[in-house]
Figure (cartoon, rainbow, N blue to C red):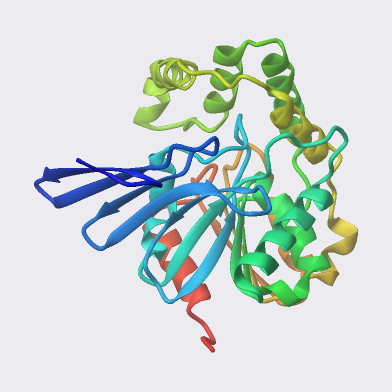
Length: 303
């Protein structure tokens, strides 16, 4: 163990090599882990947006993250959803800034991302918007076309299904009441498989996941509530044609938050978009074919 003026460094030998952990003793919780040739880190950009960073590729990719209970750097497991991109990119999974003002809109959040991308990267990057992040990324792509190279709308559409709006509003209500276990259970249950073997395991899995997620509940539900209210009002249908970047809309046919019709209408409304829907898949889309399709799209027309 070695101490530095800025960081505390801990090295641990494991079967996969040396794992080095760096802890920064500041008010903002930054951390970095190095495993062989891969560096994982988390912190806040100068503009205040929290990020998780991974990968060692030659160019940046920014993920607009989905709905979370707190706007802060997420746990290490968050890194592995887009792990397959780490050879092509340095991946930044970015949330909204903490302390969102009341009545903040999806467009306001998109403008925050634009400020960050201009400050940090100075020009266009590939972007992925997943779920709630997909709502925000549509505003971003339409309002700031100079900052988008290629766009992926991942398990998202121009508006939520009505049932999903009701579900998210209930999650926000439970969070405001401090009922974090119930809020977690409702959100986790909504994405559990409805068929196959996992159907029979869904109830104990919901209980376990909700219990683990509630062990350290957020101190303040306001960011969650502001985001839920903003997405409840979000409908981008009339502005889809303003998105000019090459776009991939990719999702599962059994997504509980959006209908197949919403995905089709979203792709049809964007001039340079294509649509991929997967049978039997829920929220968010994933799996081997998803990885193959996403990589193929992002690797097109490299400049």
